[in-house]
Image (cartoon, rainbow, N blue to C red):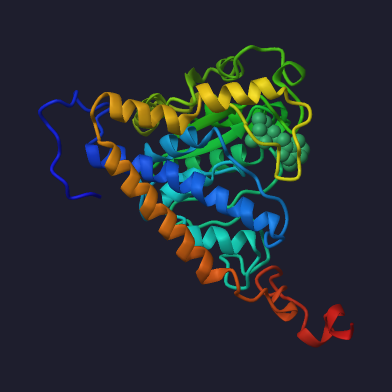
Length: 351
Ligand SMILES: Cc1ncc(C[n+]2csc(CCOP(=O)(O)OP(=O)(O)O)c2C)c(N)n1
Ligand SMILES: [Mg+2]
């Protein structure tokens, strides 16, 4: 990261076994996630985004910190993100340019315009492409991590599930199966208080999502999802236990969805005071910055340098792809069907 000498005389011991460079790298991912989503919002308002825009405002901390606890690289750990885990995908190596192209359905996007937003995968970099059906990535990751175990590979899987998603049948079936098989799987349950407009009190009768996992004999705990270092430490420990043969690990992160379900949703069902409180008192990026500065783990100018570099990176990525073409109709079917119909038989040829 920066080449400036490390201030060793005043600073307190570094936390969670992280180096100063790693602390700043985590900050960069937080800032990258937020800045990229802000840019996507601007593009959405210019009608350049195709489909919905799903923000993770207010919960970037848990995405970035949990993914950062994995071993990254070819044939290492695998992460299964959801729509609000852009931060996790960036940590695993997804590029802002790819995300922008996906959201604008460009011909040059990772899915060549066939799929949108963060729905794409790269097994080399260690992230899966999700499907929309809530809960279904739990049995998928149970299967993948069972494979790791049967092959004797020292690899771990990490899967996210929303508070609403824990009401689905597949969540329960998948979790139980993974627990019985003692799969090396870490589950991050995001208690962000909303599932579309449904609050937790209308979604489940338990207080903590961790209670659901304990019912399946799984080691489960709850952490403050907006405390970046707490999430990192909890996930790091859970990943080590899973890798060491300890079976499924379940971490509930208490956080808050500060935007509507997607950009079209005006959140009329959310009290304004509640949104204000989370924005002013419990923003994960602000809290992390405060910790870094208070403990003298870094200096303000290191952070502003990162902010500036991120801004330039997002500007350049936007300029590089905003005017790129959409896919040609003829390119839509190959890769979707094993044997796509011949081009001359496609219905849109006759339009
Ligand atoms: C099985 C299933 N039912 C319903 C939906 C429609 N749906 C998409 S997102 C969503 C809300 C998800 O809430 P939550 O799991 O809490 O995740 P969050 O949006 O808060 O990140 C719903 C109901 C779906 N995709 N899959
Ligand atoms: Mg939710």
